[in-house]
Every structure is written in structure tokens, then in C-alpha cells.
Image (cartoon, rainbow, N blue to C red; front, side):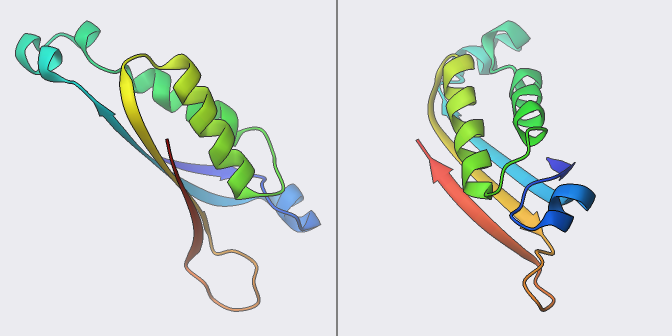
Length: 108
């Protein structure tokens, strides 16, 4: 998922924002959904997206904080997932040189 958001410690990051990528990996028993082909038997990806979008819309100084909020909110609201992995990346961070991205990776 890609978002324009306003996370960072520098004032211009808070004003102008930056591009961020969020990758979510979910581990769950999908056998029932595999056999039934019924959306009600699967994880609701729209709910996952909406949670990530909401948390990305709340500015923070650190991407670690944002990733933690995403992970905790997903765990609290999405039923049936046994393990989560979240990777949150800030593209082109203002570090004084051309840098593709900086990332944090959390799992639970």
C-alpha cells in the first residue's frame, strides 16, 4: 500500500509530507476460504486496508510508532490471524543524500 503522509521529526516533513509504503503479511488458516470460495470465510482485506489508511493518516515523529499502531490495531480488530508482519518504509528520506528508503519491520 502506498500513502502520502506526514510522519517525521523535521518540520518540512510535517508540512509537505512524504511517500510511504506499507506491506502487511497475515498468517491464518485459509483452508475454509480455499474450499468455499466465500468472502465470509476469508480475512477481510478491505478492513485491513482501512485500518492501515487510518493509522497512516495520524502523524507521528517516528515510523516505528506508526508501524506499532498499525500492528496493534490490526491485532485488535481482525479476527483469525495467527501472525502478523508489518513493513513500513519512508521513501526518499531527508538524510542528506539520495536514499531509496528507510524501513522498519515488526512482527507479532
